Amino acid sequence: MSQLLALSPQNLAGKFWRRPSGFLFAADRQVIPLVGAEIAKASVSMPIGFIQAGDIYMLVAFTSPTPGNNLYIGPDGKWLGNYVPAALRAHPFHLVSPEPGADAVLCIDEASGLISDTPEGNEPFFNENGQPTQNILDTLNFLAQTEQNRIPTQLAVNAVVAAGLMQPWPISVQSGEQQVPVTGLFRIDEARLNQLSDEDFLKLRAASALPLIYAQLLSIGQLALLERLGTIQRDLALQHQQLTQPLGNLGGFTLGDDGDLKFH
Image: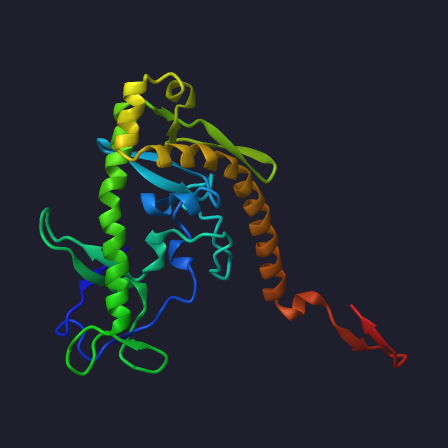
């Protein structure tokens, strides 16, 4: 579980941080939030859809038919897809508002294991003048831009809901020998979209919802990629098991009574 600590010279005096070596921190994320600025790239790399969170719907990338699993991350933490969602690229940093309407604060996840007391192989949070380093400023800027884009993204999603275009997405994905059903996802109702009046269609355009709508419909074809990734994951897991198998289980050579080497 995340333990967020605000970045300040007082909180992190004499501390350093290192970049994650992979994406194992997201290995259990079946869905990943998206913003509108990234849907063009995300929609050709992974299925995207919507989930319901309270009274609103959220735009997300869908990574696995199995809860608590992410098929885009290999056993070694390597990302197996072509596009990494913005929500994962700033780890272990987060931009958090302590309360509604308050200025957002840059925080780091103390539970990430990426904070260190030593400088070797790590990066400082602050320079000798107590000011954030350029890498920290770049991270802050990236997170700020992402959060700024989240507002128009949500407005676009809200427009989709208001137009009556949100419908449950009853899908199943091949996993091994079984078809795994997936629940809780929503998609664009394409039939209803094609029946909208010109007035209602123009409302969607005014809300910048059309790119989101067509990107979601386009991304449906990426469900087949999840099945291929499932096969890749099983092959990688088997290879990992073979590589880590104790040598004693693999047999070996012994010298027989006749002086010949024999494998057993």
